[in-house]
Length: 78
Image 1 (cartoon, helix red, strand yellow):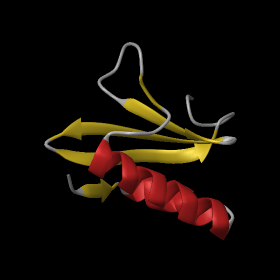
Image 2: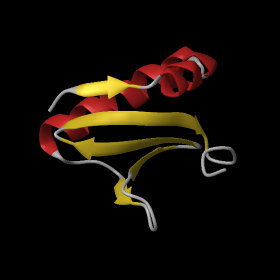
Image 3: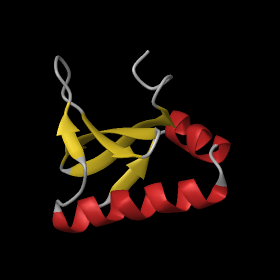
């Protein structure tokens, strides 16, 4: 599965510390390849969230994986 990032997701990724950003990218790639990871479907929307420490990545799966937003857990669901 191919991973695509929105402008909002890339902006959020740049705001993170570099080691956390690298880890989130690797976890997204691992989920795209194997389907394994701390991922849950969100209620009320056709999206999923990947959890890493205090950071979350929201993404949709429609053929490809589209990462919509990456941010701290206090800001992600607003």
